[in-house]
Each structure stands twice: as structure tokens, then as C-alpha cells.
Length: 592
Ligand code: OXD
Ligand code: MN
Image (cartoon, rainbow, N blue to C red; front, side, top):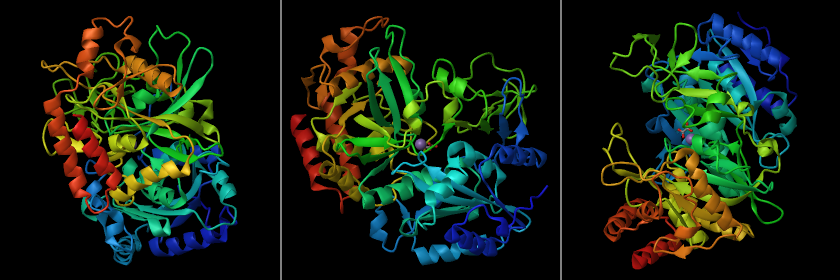
């Protein structure tokens, strides 16, 4: 089934959009152009088309109303950092941690691949907003894609349709994004950012992070570039609000590398003893933060949906996510049960006796391979989240009182400490690290530095990015307090020292009390730490002051090697790393 909405029947009067779409259509030569308006009627029409063509499988609508299933090409299951480029006039601008290519060369190469790439296909024109409608922080993008799966996923992940054209008016400052699957060939896979032109070209993939261009490409890579230019911050952070029984709400933003539980923390349910306390989710992946009129930092979540890793999602790890993905969700690369339900490793309930794995092959518990791909995903509307913050749609954003950094560290890093000041806080973010799993190149236990969890997402030189963080002191009156957490410290026997999940509320409570100057702290070599009597251990089975001391201990030998490891990152970024951070390292070394 094709549609008859042609170029001449565009649903915008913005001439820049219309002529750019015409230009791209002349290049890509689609059979048809479909101008998305974001309506429910359109959703039904496109969904029916995707089911008819086999791109989506309709799931059991009694169990999972509004849910659909997609299998990707097995060669296309994750973001591909080696195919991701930042194209600016000078190589130095992108620094040593990004792939660089000259814009002219990359335009020529990708336009060559795009030429005629949409013959026999439809080009969907997806106008979208990153951010709530009417917010001064919100940006407009238009994505052209030949993937109906992308068109349908974009309407979950962003606010799409006429609202975007309304916000744009007749201006020309929208992000131009072009995506073509080509033949989903890893050899012709490129995700190219042109920050100076506010343009993204993505070819050869159909996987979320590479193709839902509003997310990592615009909201983080291009976003971070624009943020530095315009005096705000685009960060790989969740945003949550903690409400006290008296109704006081405190908002915090937190950056953890992938697979460290960002979505879980954003949707945390406080344990029973925290009667009347509530956590509200503003966002689970990205925060855009800008100084407000009162000099505080205000944050919005630019997204409208969650694109989360499915395996391990259950009623212990994240009960709110379980509810969020029960309806209106697009599942990709999980396993399919005979009754049209889905399954994944770590799901509640019994392991099925039989299902189809993410590749479509018969799977039984004896199979050697996983049934769901470890990076299988849900795309679910944030409004499905039982604890979505009402402020998630507030154009003013929320005032951020604390920034939390964290990683997965079996040793060395205590459960919680607070920076002495902003520069020290920037140092904590800059030296953030996480241990790689056995599957990752580099080997078990090796710490990969991932500054502010932005290593794959910073659209310019990392040293300049640190300098921008430091500069925020001049652009704001009151900056958030900065904290570092580690939920993953282990004892000599390899057992976790901290129960994690909902119990992380105890750490969050101390953080929030610190922000409101309600609790004192003790000075340590690393920063301010909780006094043992201030840290709530009530009702924690098998956990008392001795366990807390162990979890918080600072081992001088471990820290000597940690400081050396941190230096490797600084050596790599030598040309631009701010002197203030070198000084912070020296101060840390002298304290240790
Ligand atoms: C994500 C990621 O998908 O960080 O959010 O990779
Ligand atoms: Mn992410």
C-alpha cells in the first residue's frame, strides 16, 4: 500500500523545509513522500502498513495492548562507534576521542550512497521537537527516513508532527536529518554529524541509536556542540524528582555509563520504610540544562519516550518499567512466545519451554544462545510510566539541586561521596570510569574512562567540554552540588557490599538532605562523606555500621593506582585539558 501524499501536499508552509525536502527527494528518489502529521489516524495507517509488509509483528493485544515486535537484521543490533563521525572544518575541534572527516569529503561520500537509495521506497518526513512544546530549550528537527520502523519509533521517542512546525514558524534553524537503510550493510554504515550545519546523515543501519536521529545524534552530539556555543549543557543524564511526605520536591540529574542502571534509578520505588516519599521520573537518558532567570540550572528531558535495554527488566530491578512497557511499546530483538507475548532473560515468571529467539529461530532452555539479544530494546512512551513527573512536560524545566556521577566499580570507589566544590565535581565527572564486562574488548575488570558518560556522545573535543563545564560557574549563580556513587563495590569473595535497586533511596535521601543543608558530613581524602550516624541503615538486613565502613573505605594503595589510571585519560587529552583539572588531580594525590 502506498500513500498519495506527495511533495506538493506538504503539511507545512515553511519554505526552507519544503525546498530542502524537495532537494533530498531529488537525491534519494523515493517513489512517494509521506509527510507525517503525528495524528492517531496516521499511526494506525502506518502501523497497519508495517504489519502488512512484515516489518512489525502484532503482539498479543490482550496481554500487550498496542504493542508490536520488530526483528532487526542480525548485523545491525547496536550503536557503531567506529562508523560514527563528527565532520567539522578542523580536526582539532573534535579531539582525539571522536572520528573526524572533512565535511566536503563526507558529504560527497554519503550523498553518493544516498543517490537513488530510496527508489521503490517511501520517504517519511518526520518533523519533531526535542523538548516540551514552547520551551526556550526545545529544538526542532526534521528527519527524512525510508524506514517505516523509524517513522513509527520516532513518534514514541519524540513529540512529532504539527507541533514541530508550529514551534519552527518560518525560521530555518531546524536540524536536518536524512536516514536511509540502504541495504543494511555494515560496510556502508555511516553516522555523520555536521554540527556547523546542524545536519545529520545516517546510512546503512536501522538500529535505534544510529537512526532515531533526535536521540544520540541531535540531543547529545549536535546538542553538546550547540550547548557550548549557546551557554547551556547537553548531558547523558537521567533526571528525577524526590518528593518528601511534606510535598517538597528536589530534582537531581545523574550520569552513569551504559548498563549501570540509569533507567532503574530514574524510576526507583522507595522501600516501605520511606512512607510518603516518592520518586518521579523526568527523564531516563538525556538532560538539557540551562541557567534560569534565578541563576539556577533548569533541566528538561528532550525526549518523549524511553529506549531501554529489555533483558533484566523485572519487578525487582524496575517495577515501573515493567508497567511502562505493557502497552503501546515497540519491542526489538526480544524473544517471541507462541501466544504472541514476548520474553527475555531476566523476565518475571518461568522460563518458557519454547519460543522464537531474536533471530526467529526456535529456542528452548537447552539452547546455547540467548533468546533475547542482550541489547534488545523497548521503545515506550514516557507517559506510560506510572511515576512520570508532571514536570516532564513543563517548558520551564526543573531546577537541578544535585548532579550525580557513577560507574560500575568492584573496588576502590566508595558508595557515596560529595565533591568539595564545582571544580572538584567536574574532576569527578571527568575521571568517571566503569569496569568492562568479560564480553567487552579489553578484558574483565579493566576500567574504561567515560567522562560524564559522554565518551561516545560528545560532539567536540573532550578537553574543551571540561572547560565548558568549568565555565558554567560564570554563567550561573547557584550550581548543583556534585556527588559520586558506586552501587557495585564487592567484597573479597566477589559479593556485592550494597543491596542496590530500591535501597539506593537511602543514598538519594542523604544527597537531598545535603542539598538542603539538613545534614552534616565528614571530610575525607575523596570529598565529603556521610557520618555513619547520619546514614540510614534501619531495616537493612545484615547491614550495619561495620558494613557501611567497609563500603566507604578508602584504600591508599588502590587510590595510588587509580590516580595513575586517571592520568592516562588526561595524557590522551593533553592538548586541551584545563589546568584546573590537573590541579584537582594534584590536590587529590596530596590528600591521598
Ligand atoms: C542508549 C545508550 O541507548 O546509551 O541510551 O547507548
Ligand atoms: Mn544512553
